[in-house]
Image 1 (cartoon, rainbow, N blue to C red):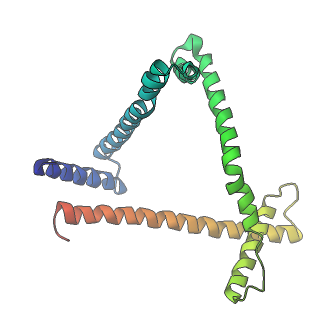
Image 2: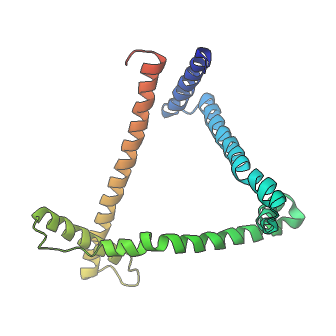
Image 3: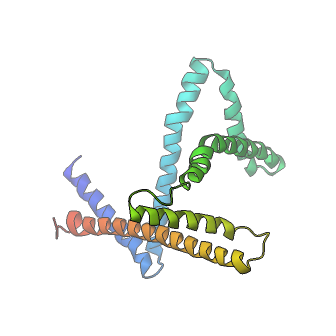
Length: 210
């Protein structure tokens, strides 16, 4: 890549970085322009990637060359989604949506049921004492108690009074702490991205730091 192209690319990155960060102070037309540019580029990239990696190989090689005519079924189902733009036959797009929902639900249940359900239940069965590490014992107790209390919080068939109310309150606080930790982790990730862009502006663009 020529030095001119590198320079142009650096200036474009700097421009879009500054414009996007400007939304922190006030919404403005330049920010909306940068936002629409990013969305448009991502959409165009996704379309091109899908065409060259999936559509063209399947049509030219698998369908026309190898004669796998069964591929016509997913192709027709995929094309039916565009009937939503033609009002008289818009109802045909429902077949594509129903097919995708059915296949997607079955795939998720078959693939993710064990790691996201069974394994999480199994992970809560922890020894509450006798591990040889007092801190691990305390952590296991807090983990099990917090999990059970959080589940009790969602027992809406029982009024939250008495013991059940106090247990539900503990579960509520447990979830608030967990959500706060997740939010803090998200904020730290965004701060890391922001610092990366500032390093780019002060280093690669302005050359003030190395």
